[in-house]
Length: 184
Image 1 (cartoon, helix red, strand yellow):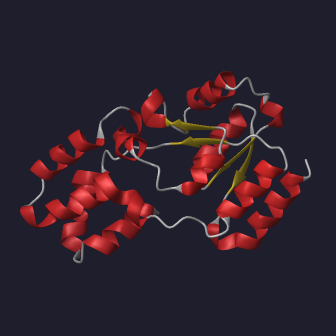
Image 2: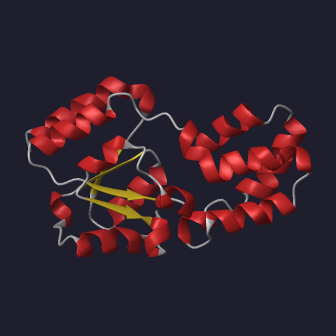
Image 3: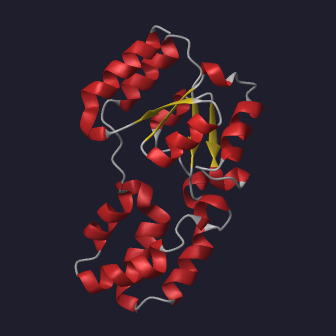
């Protein structure tokens, strides 16, 4: 998970990691829903010792700079787009990311970007899936939801949308799956 990776990158000792988990990651998801990331950051910093302030800023406001996308994802997205598929990104995302996601070149291939912070809905709740389906007038039976969290895939299935649980360690399996989608 990205949180573990960021903790290892910015915080060297276990005691500080435990404190960071308690203060920063305890309510992390609230940024994906309705709390502005800068407000969240200020609140967290007020509860952390000064030695952890810069780590808090980097992790809360700039986490996406340290995120390594799946290396073949852009090519797979382009192939799906070229074969006539509509692509929608449905993501739990913070306000900090929503303000400037232009550095992620891959996003331009999507027909729409649906970010939880902007619509005040969050995965795995059914309302976010229903929102996307309704917004784009989609037929659930024609959709495939791809996510790296089982809870989100299970939620997708419950509302009638097929899902694929993405596992970056099974790269070839995922590439085969996408190639099969191309022919649908």
